[in-house]
Image (cartoon, rainbow, N blue to C red; front, side):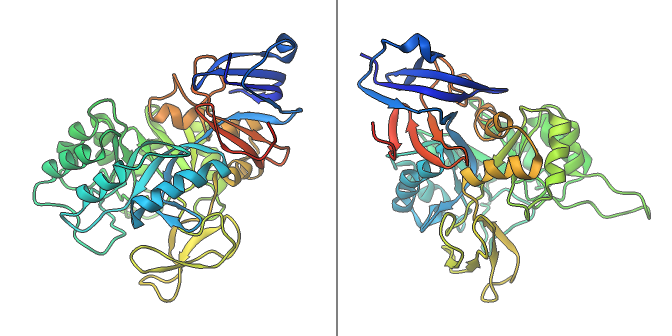
Length: 396
């Protein structure tokens, strides 16, 4: 007998909402999807009557560091709690965001994180936001005297998961490191850069095909001819059809018009949403302490994290208070996109970035049964990760 039947749902596909459809799941996979009338006599171990609610593919967060009281940089215990909590916000898969550790500590710390076995959202890899960045946001030396050996050590430490590196195209020697980083069809992200057009194009040609928290920490080159706007990493990325991008859509990290421009340049399948969530995301506005002792503050739900006067750069951005359900709602409100497009930016598009688009990101036969049930306000009511209910609200 099938494991799970979700009936009478409005299923969100890539381009439309399929009214009154039902979904059958077996062994963690979607085995059948069809109009509900075709399931009148169907049965399963667990049956959920969606009663016209939305059924969407689970969200995939490519860039997140924390949720509520838990922060990845605090260690494996916090990561385990993060995985348990994220289904509450519709996240069924994540790249675990890891900040640079002091030189010599990174691989060991990453190895401890890789031992975590999630009881909720699926770990899809580790996103190493450094140390191979030109514009640093940490205070210690994190690059070893042999960067290539350091890359290999981090890749080994992340196993059985992939290590996804964020790099700056203008980081000295990066073109020698990218071939190591992209082995096994691994995505490479670009960020924290003031690269010029040539540096960016060289990095893209070498294999860096995604830009994370695009527009944030992407400095413009200096103006050399008065009145002539210089081009840099942003323009080179927008111009290359091979490169996908993601945005922190909280209304302050980036002007929504930049996201609209990216959609116009990239089309519907190459623009993603992320949270870049910091500790305190999902909690009431307040002040919270990061792992390095710096204090941050959120002034409204889903707003950016900003360093307080007790930190080294008061008022500066330090991630976000976004949860992924709110990011999807913001896409509809701020960008004017359709519900299917907003969900696509949170599911199918991130899956494509990670080369998982044949198994994740859609409610489609043969795909992983990663699904979320949403009400009309897009509040998450129930979440399944590979067919297992990880956030139960409705009675089954």
